[in-house]
Amino acid sequence: MKITSYEVLGKLPDLFTFDDGRPVRTPEDWAERRKELYRTAVELQYGEIPPEPEFLEIDPITLPNTVGRMNIWKLTTGTRAHPVSFTMYAHIPKGKAPYPVVIDGDLCYGCMQDPVISDKFVEHGIMLVKFNRDEIVPDIRNPKRTGNLYETYADRNFGALAAWAWGYSRVLDALETLGLVNRNSVTFTGLSRGGKAAMLAGVLDERATIVNPEATCAGSCSCYRVHMKALTEDGRELRSETLKDIINAFPDWFGPGMKAYEDDEASLPFDSHSLKALVAPRVYFDCQAESDIWSGPVNTYQSSIAALEVWKMFGKPENVLWYWRSGGHAHTPEDFDMLIEVIERELHGTPLKSEKFMRLPFDPPEPIFDWKAPFYG
Image (cartoon, rainbow, N blue to C red; front, top):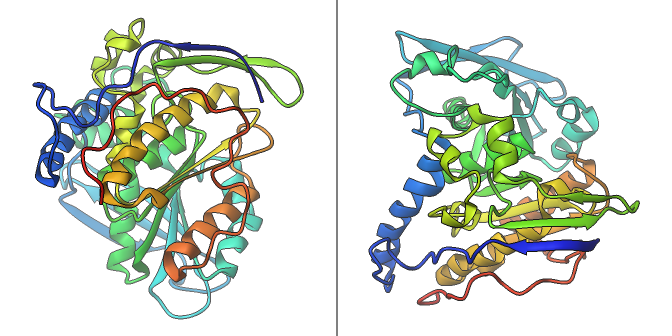
């Protein structure tokens, strides 16, 4: 990858300084500082998060817990006054439950219907669980935010990404109720807008032991304060997505307060490193592609190395992982192979085999932050 243009709009806000200027000095301070980061990186960015549901009903559509075929359940949840229903699909491996589980909300996206993908996980004893996030909130430009989960929680001003993230947790609730999930190995994953939802879900639900967003572009794991252009592997010059791009194309995904910053990213009280920091010290594994310039490869790197300071504080820097592959914007079998390596490292202590982990397809630029973790685990 050859970078042709690189603009930094400002330094990344200090994760270890309170809004009133006080420094973070202790673990107790960090617990309080984390609440401040949540208010901006989550609530400002995505709106008011839907609450825990009043109930959850799980109705089998196929003979349940069958190895070698699709297992399907209908989930009905939310409030009794305004319930919402969606389907959960699971590929169950051989052996006895509970299983390591990977949850993906991208059933509306073609690759998640590919049996090659499900076979990869099942062969490694991992249960792949899929749902269609669009059943919770349709992915249409819906400025009034009506229908489905919007009606369930009409008193909350949240965007579609928050609704989709809520779905990940309801799927996990169902798997726990069914006794299928190994609580020591729960992965949330997704691509692009699905990656945004998976990332937010992993922030909100600490039951996720591995958070694996793929090519989220702006609005999640990229960095608002970096604008870049680069050449793809076939020589085309493309640019990264900006806040203005995404907030105007998909306003219903976000909280209402984000529009005010579309021409002034440098004034944002947070950036994507703040969101990533809320996953620590659990495993954060980011997947990118060399020709997917829209997703902001350098932007993502900058926010990752800044957030890494929080994992250093916990003594867990090995829990921040990334890799780049050849190609463009897609969720590929190679990506899932890499994820399986990470899952097996966490479950069994198996060393990572691929040499692509932690490699960069570009010369790393200078960090756009000048602060460090105040203490180290």
